[in-house]
Image (cartoon, rainbow, N blue to C red; front, side):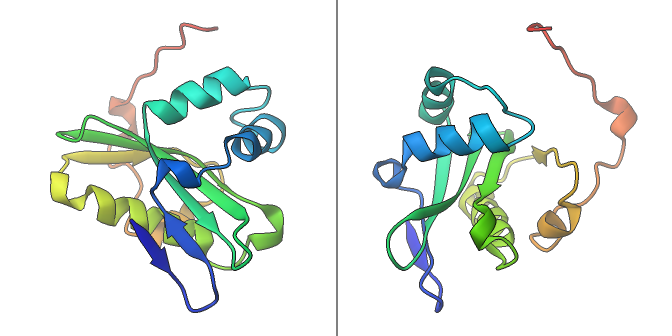
Length: 143
């Protein structure tokens, strides 16, 4: 799937459109939730996920998101990253909306994400605060 905007940005779900080295660089050096993540881990996570990339008019990748899903009941939107020079242009909301639209045919019970400071970005795509956060638990086996 490829969609375009009038300003020249293109969104693609084609795995061949991904610049894996660039995504690894972004996540491992600039994304607080993934600092130090190895390239091997990034590659493995991409293989097991639905991937979304945005490219500018020159063809350079400028944003990334991935979704972990069973395509039946649940999905988790994660690793959303927009290059600093392209922030403030609605690309994060566009990614979140593309994820929502791509997952719609599966009629999932729940699509989750975690964000520290971008609630308004995701709210524009229909995400709302989790209604009962006290119901959530986490297992951190790596710690």
